[in-house]
Image (cartoon, rainbow, N blue to C red):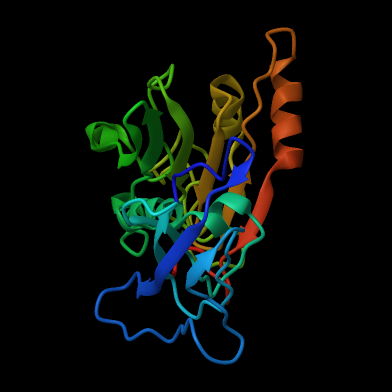
Length: 264
């Protein structure tokens, strides 16, 4: 509640009138309770901080209504995200909007369509004084191929992260073929008769080169994994090949198995 805790050395008494829990998904009956065993969300007067302790069983918003020092009743709330799939990546685990951006990008890539009809898709999170906006860049879709996408450089002002897709299953055992060379993509005539090429796992060297220039955190998603590339601002004196090696070593691979961060 936005009010002073101390004024002139005196505590400001606070009166909590209610705590409420609202599930994020509309039409879902709340399984979370703020009363009963294991929950403690007291109301009434206090001269100290007051806490609501409970177990969230679905994502939702906790709202408290209270007044301070006899003033008008005010309201404050906090959103709690309950994840069936915890990846260990602080952004993916704490930000459903990022998961949604990755999923929307992959859905827009036509990942189950014919090889030549798939397209890499790029998304960005851009923040300014009015907040942050996640967007897929539709204006570059006409130039995307099954294994290339060219983001603008420099990135738009306020860009804090990017995502893009590899709409294939990596690995020679995947049965989901794609030309191995970005220069040849999506043409297949360079392959010998009967030869099959597969997408390599992880971000490409071109991806890492671009990330080294941009210096912002980036996520790459294919049909097996999500790859989290750190945002590192390399000084001009750093050799580009060394920057790529550093980023490759520090890229985290998050499997999309039984715990798929895109299926939330």
